[in-house]
Image 1: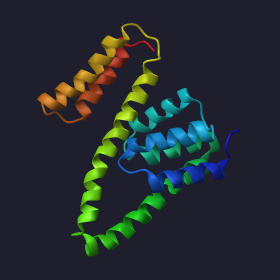
Image 2: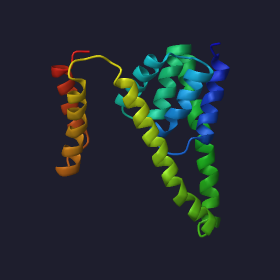
Image 3: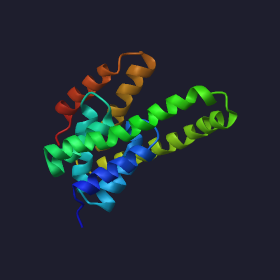
Amino acid sequence: MRGNLKDFVYSNIITSLFAFGGGVSFLPFFFFFYLNKYQFLDISRFYELFGYASATPGPISPLFAGVVGFEVFGIWGFLLGIISLVVPAMVITIIAYHYYGKYKNNKVLGNLSKYMIPVIIGVLLLVVFTVSNETLKYNFDFKILHYMVLILVPLIAIGKYKTAPFIPIIINIIYTFIFIKL
């Protein structure tokens, strides 16, 4: 059964309330709601739209919710997707900031934030493995060699030469256009 606009807004609100971390940490929630529970998209279109959202400037998760909303429900899906994902997190942030001043020296809260770091790392690793596994299904020549080049270019450029992140992105885009025939 395919979900409706109400289900889409509900899934974004729940994602906004319970996802903790940056943009790609939202991906398991989106995967569960958009693919498994409400079947808004098929898996290949899901990753394609995630790629579009990742390639555009700005925060990934609202862009992705907007792109999926537009794909499935048109302009109202786009607007409600972004609003339903951003507003609950914004309200929580305002409330947390209000109480932070009162309880900033509380040891329980300090320890809680320290123990969330491994959880966030685990979620990010899950996202990396899931996306990598899905993209490796595409059939093109010398795929492992291409992946190694596409991974090593940013690691060397940013890690060793301390370049700005846009330089390896541009290099990888040029490399993809020249050597990978999708």
